[in-house]
Length: 171
Image 1 (cartoon, rainbow, N blue to C red):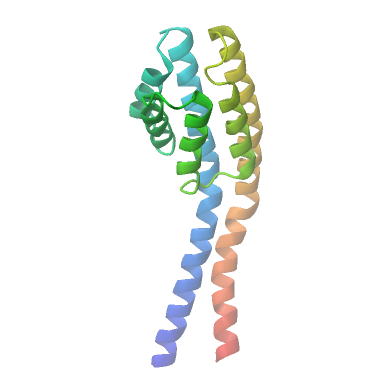
Image 2 (cartoon, one colour):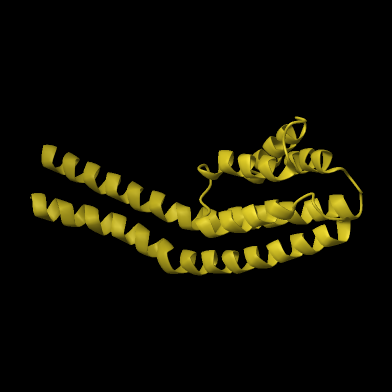
C-alpha cells in the first residue's frame, strides 16, 4: 500500500512538473501578443489622441492585461519624476517586470531598442518606430507559436513518462 502511494506521488509530481514546463510555451505567445496590442494602443494614443507619453502610458496600464499593465504603470510612474529620461524610465520598467514574464531575450532586445527611440521623435517618426517594433514582435510571436506547437505536448509527455520510468527503476 505504501509503495502504491509513493508511486502515485511520484507520477503526480513529475506530471505536474511536465505541465508546468509546458505552460511556459503557452504563455509566451500570449504575452508577446499583449505587448503588441499595448504598442498599438500607444500608437493610437500618440497619433490620434495627441496624449502626452506619461498619460498615454497610464491609460494603457488601465486597459491592458498583465504583463503590459504593470509595464506601463511603472513607466508612467517613472515618467512623473523630473530627473529621469524616457529611455531610462522604459528600460527600468522593463527590467522590473521582465523576470515575471515568460518572454525571451529576443523580445527584451526588441523592446529595449524601441525604448531607445521612444519620446525622441515627432509623432510620425514615432509611429514608424512602433510599426518596426510590431514587425519584429510579429516574427517573435510566430516563432513562439511554432515552439509551442512543437514542445508543449512533448513536455507534458516527458513529465508523465519520466515518473513512470522512475517508478520502474525504484520498484
